[in-house]
Every structure is written in C-alpha cells, then in structure tokens.
Length: 149
Image (cartoon, rainbow, N blue to C red):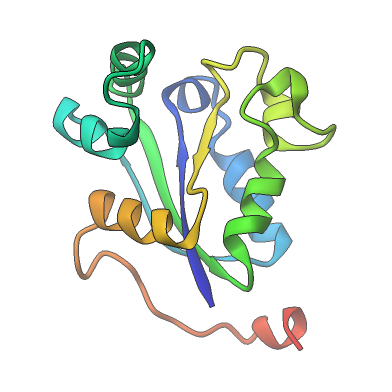
C-alpha cells in the first residue's frame, strides 16, 4: 500500500472545510493513519517548499502557509498518490475538473484549500518533515476486504 501526505491549508481550515476534505478520502476507501493540526514554522515551510527556493512566489508561499493552522494527514491505500491528486484537481481551481476538491471549494490558485504530495518519493519526504516517528498508526480494518480484491 502507498502512503501520501495531504494538508488542509490555512484557507481550508479557516473556511471549516477540514471535515469535508477528510470525509472525501475516507468515503473513497482510503485509511487515515496520521492526523494532526499544527502551525507550520518558517523553517519547516522552507524545507517543505525547498524546490521553489529562488522563484518569485517563494516568499509569499511561505508567508501564506505559515499564516494560520493547517491539518496534516497521512493517508494509506492502493495507488493513493495518483488517486489523491485526481481527487484534489488541478492546482488552479478554475482549471480543476468538476467535483474535485479544488473545483468545489477553491477560486484562486493561491488559496486552493489543499496540498497533496505529487509522487511516492515526495510523499515519503513530506511525511518525514511533518510527522515524527511513532505518530503514524498502523492498524487493520475489516472494511479493507470490501474495498480491495
């Protein structure tokens, strides 16, 4: 099973969308194995968005993600990275497919309510940034036999 890192961004938390977003992933059949609300420090934000250092939007991106609480989520399931990306929709909510999270709740590219890892490699890196060893919960669900062949 794959794991991915999702984050309800400050605008999603402020707009009370956390429960709705979590619910979509649970209803899809994915298993939440890590969940916490916290405020990202500048140091963590810069580490998280490290590939964007030097780009014109880097400072505003860090300012935004550190502006309020976020909810970090680790989700586990078959092909969860690509499925989560599809469920979230395009980064620009105006270009996101109808019914996706960003299409449903976003209007502006800079306030698109959710972040999700873009690869298995990124997932592992981002999970390690935001979750300490022992914070992820391993458990089995009887439900899984109804979800996976």
